[in-house]
Amino acid sequence: MRVAVVAGPDAGHVFPSVALCLRFAAAGDEPVLLTTDGWRDAAMAAGIDAPPLEWLTLRHEADIGRWLHDRAAELARDLVPTLTALSPDLVVSDVLATCGGMAAELTGLPWVELSPHPLYLPSRGLPPIGSGLAPGVGVRGRLRDALLRRATARSLRQGHRQRAAARQGIGLPATDPGPAARLVATLPALEVPRPDWPPQAHVVGPLLWDPVPTGLTPPPGDQPLVMVAPSTAVNGATDMLSATLAALDNLGVRAAISTFQPPDRLPDWARAGAGGQDELLRQADVVVCGAGHGLLAKALLAGVPVVAVPGGGDQWELANRAARQGSAVVVRPPTADAVREAVVKVLGDQRFAAAADEAAKTAAEVADPVMVCRSVL
Image 1 (cartoon, rainbow, N blue to C red):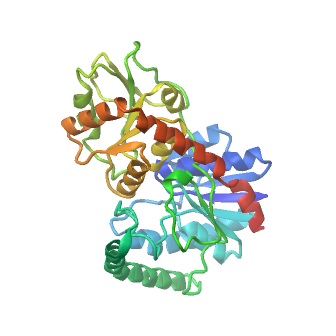
Image 2: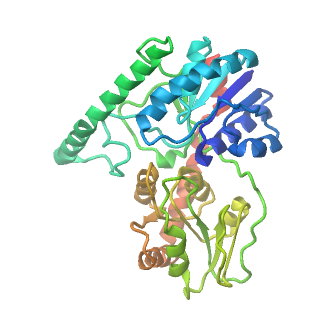
Image 3: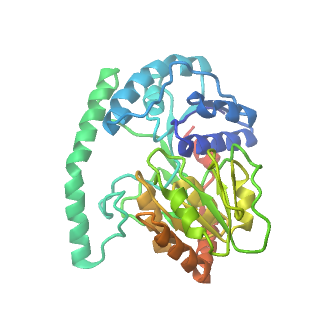
């Protein structure tokens, strides 16, 4: 099976797409990664075919509607010749690169959507995604959720109209038929039950890839190790790292800061650099992170509890889901005192680590993404 995987520009979307390509390759299929140049060299070094695409400029747009609809339609039209030349059997389109699904429709190819996080479709049984709220309980709770859904309904209708107009502009029917299947690449522990779960959506577990698998060694010693991972997303909490370093000072811990942009100066109890997250997680006692899905899922898979310092996007939603599951403490805003209190709380209560272990066990309940894609054909 030859598969074209179209990925959005953010690390949180490119990395799962590379991981999926590696799964395809290991199963004997032929994946081709179509993404921007930011991580293309690293993907090729991992053995993935990733041709250069000068026209593919998945830049960030201030208007998310234009990004997901109008701009995506323009890119879909440009993507058609590439797909025609590649002649894949299937297209996998990341949720941030909606051009992939539209281009597949234009070329008559079946396509599958990759969600590198929990399923974020609206549901009649949940509060709006992004609120961070648990589903309401009882009459009052259900009424609250209904009112919140009504408050967001106008924006959803506007998005549907914008998508319909964008589709018609490139010769597609106004009504979007959607993908043949959805790969929901998360832990079941981070999902929430909903009465209208789509039958074609499959939880396949986190798709994780580290472009720099080695390179960061923690400070020596036997004190608790705090792994700090500032968000790679543009909407991450900007002052998280400085607040965390101030919080850990004189706390009797060691810190390993996983970042592509290490600080100029660090105390002797801290080290910083890129790479080696999996090895660090095997040694860490707690992770301080922005609650982006990639690092959050890595931490829980390793059974390591989290101090979540969420920024924008879906980080607030994910942080609160992990907190309700019992494996995280949420800090907002990221003051040094609040981070310090949260780290002390997690290190002093083994129930957080036990909950992380329970979250890791849910990885045994997932579907195989390669088999899901093959079933589409």
